[in-house]
Length: 465
Image (cartoon, rainbow, N blue to C red):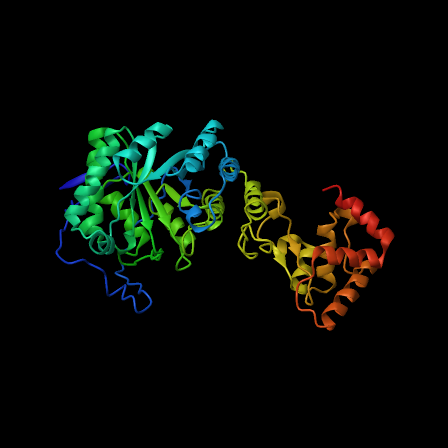
């Protein structure tokens, strides 16, 4: 049967409808996941088309999945971070939703206080256990959407739940119907999708969910969860590891609209950002992230990374306030006590800092030579130089210009006498056996010792900051 597709404007064969394959033995993809060896990436050379949705956005799981990996946040900390999420996402709601636990009185208080702010974005959603009591709690809190766990790999269905695929699907559909009966939008978390039988369970189950959505008139979102970070974005990779294949299959064979699709990845194999990009590029409107990438094991996709990816893919910030990224990182370190690894892109103390003298010399001549973009303008994070035994005169001059806020005609070059005096003191430190980076306070004292009067002039510039 042939049908004209209004999106591709091509005559296409009607989609084949996949039915549940209720197997007796679990399909554990042992040829890929042998467990006693590193997982394998298999190719079948099937390439699916790019299909960037008309609208893409970010959702947040900092207060749900992210919070499971660190000490629980206080209510005040959650409220502060929620406001920063809203500021980062901007008036268009690029950070569209944020999910919360509802289990404890503290969780519920945090939800209420965030709702009292009256911010349009991010919308507050929940994650619950699939039972009638929790559905009542969602309604009581005044939330419109909740996440529901629907594990989809045979690892979970057979080995954890001790069910058949038919039993699991029937159970899940019953839970979703209960949510619909309570007037709640379900968000179905397809746990472990990158080890699931895609055409034997995932697509048939998604198809049944779309039928329920049509009958009820209520949107049913599908969150594709790469629970162990097995997803791969390369063209031609075979399922179940193919992120493009998963997105194409859910759209093309289960008729899930892009706006109802969400990707949730983990970073076990260092692929979390590229996999989230691939999800967007191949038809998923929403990528689920956590601030600073916090989360179980290796963590979730860093929300700030996807905000930057959005700007790269769209060519615009669309109203997002990227200076909030710097404030978020500072809040985590100062108020929560979380240590941000210094070389973490966009948020680490050293992400736009250089130590090599030759690089510092380039920064001194033109910052653009060695800085990824205008980090002062975009992130409120000036490029810096860390002073150590390799920094040289240029590195010290650049540190002084940045630290003392020297601009225009006031900037120092590496020939300045105070720069040379500080260089001599730094060299003496390392000649005596020092092997750590110089701290700002130490360098400040060295400048003072070199020329106290000039130091006071420099401090006057610094106070302008």
